[in-house]
Length: 425
Image (cartoon, rainbow, N blue to C red; front, side, top):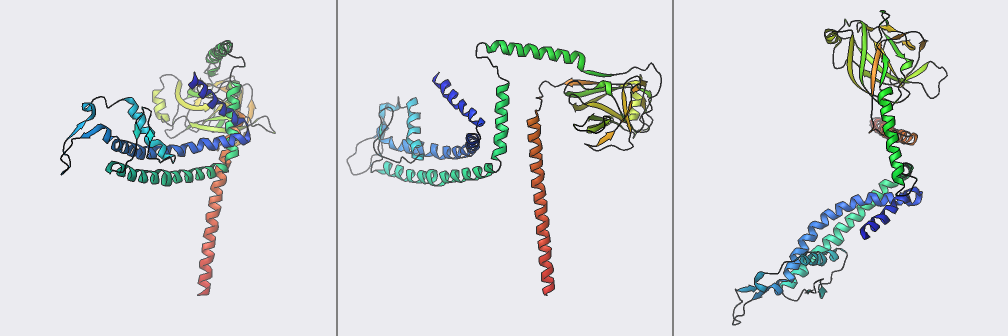
């Protein structure tokens, strides 16, 4: 429970993002933690090497007993304390870390260091203590002087870099915080279980409803027996307005005229009405898709055992959009049927974002259907996220053009300099 309480207090820091002043500082601290990982990775190598080596030297006199001699020559034989048994325990690991860790923070005392198991460590004036003294000097120089100053320099670079985009970054994280709490239960536990059960039942209901009603759009009816004659025409059926966000994974066309040209193309266009438009028949091109990218139309004609041909696609669409189609000459034509058709004559492929003025034909249509596979894992993007993406794209474009203009100015400056030198000579 104590550990859980500690995590709960840390979690409170997450709420500071709601404040502009505290939130920006919190983001800076979070970004500097990445630099701290670099420092810890390096310092651990030096720390383990120093702590194990120096602790072993300091405890040698307690664990190794040299046999006495007549004093004329050093002893060549020794004995281990307790015959080498019982020297290991888990407290030894803590002692080694405790001996080396505090040197990183500047506590470099080498005398009367009492460990957790009452072991007293002293760097005496002998060969063991002298070696520990030298190793401590080297370790403190590397840890406190070199690596610590490198860490401070990295912090300075990171803070300077983050300060430039601090406000937009804070605004984005504040939105994530607000969005998170808007999706949480307004009821406290354990009453929140009823709220989440209701949300789950509501999600399943909408999922089943979308699967049964909103996945299939269009009609393959060919009872008229007529050709729709859609060559070089961008056309869509207004009755087949897309009702859910998802991906069009299948398009079926009831051909009245089979394809005759191998190089002919059938293009799909995702279109929607502009937010502000002066004419109710104007629609904008959002994206396009080559329906014949995987199969040539001659291969399609060979595969046509019936007049209905199904194409696999991967075209992302959103609620409220329409699916338009364009048949180039020689690509075949679908059957005509009664729908609510809009069309515009267009010989070339339109560019993205282009607005076209369509002609409305309420009693005519073409035999085509498509399936929209809903994507439950896709999170619907809010207006804030769309706006944030737009601002980031503008920032990237601005930086790009600043770089281009700067390079042009430098090039002109260099050319003028060379021109002045040429005139002087």
